[in-house]
Length: 342
Image (cartoon, rainbow, N blue to C red; front, side):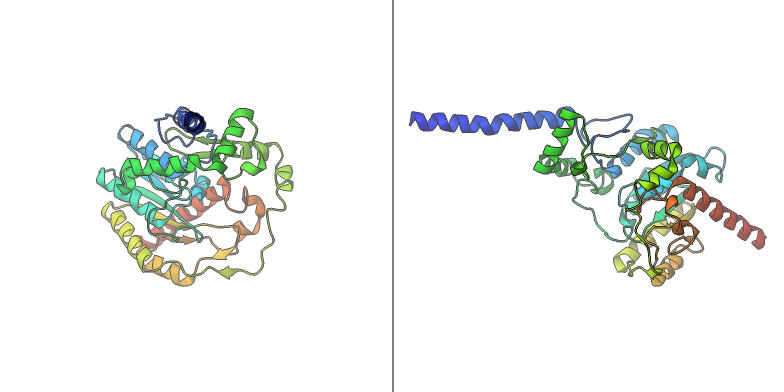
């Protein structure tokens, strides 16, 4: 009996002690940056939940910064710089990047509902839509990278934090995270867990900057693309994406349009130039045009932007000078239309 009890004690200690250390590590390091408040979320160790960071930064700043102009969409919004957009806005307009990784129309609607509930004016809005994300889901996701901030969904905060604790206790995450913390080395087998890039998040506008990419491009653009040449696969003939805007998504788009109309928002809906050169489904574009009258700007498919791989960091994200050009084209077209109407 004594032998059994001794073994049981040692066995219990062997389980409890590591759990205590893991729990202490979670609260001490706060790897996902969801336990504590931060004035600056730049240079995260792990791939973080961008929706949470965007919402936290907005809630912290909106009363003092008086935001009235918002960029909504996925991580591809990084091509649209607040400083550039402000050139086309009125003096005193304040821009906030309200983006999220893999953002959907549902996520954009939740953010507009939040702004509406807080009586935050939406004077200007850019909505960046993607064929591969915007209409892929009409409900909250349970992945720790894509779940929405509880201030948007209304779920209890403890349920939100359960998702991150579960992600932390995943052996695949623990192995990569603590190897990195102990050695300081980033390895290829950590991809998807440890953040490979050097990223800054502006503490006022929430603008994303890919610091290491931009430094390498400035130093030697040819070398940057030489190292990534296998990434940029050849494209064939232009092809049309499958229809995505189904009934549930149509209702979401209509509510978004209603909120924008109620705010008298000057908005633009951008169908971005993705490297795969898939053109938005023509029926989907027609549905969106029927809701967002004269405010759809389609840059999908084969065009001067998608033709040149040097317009991209990799096959998913186009570079800021592309966003600059899109803004100039949209506002020039808007000005020309206004002049014709006069």
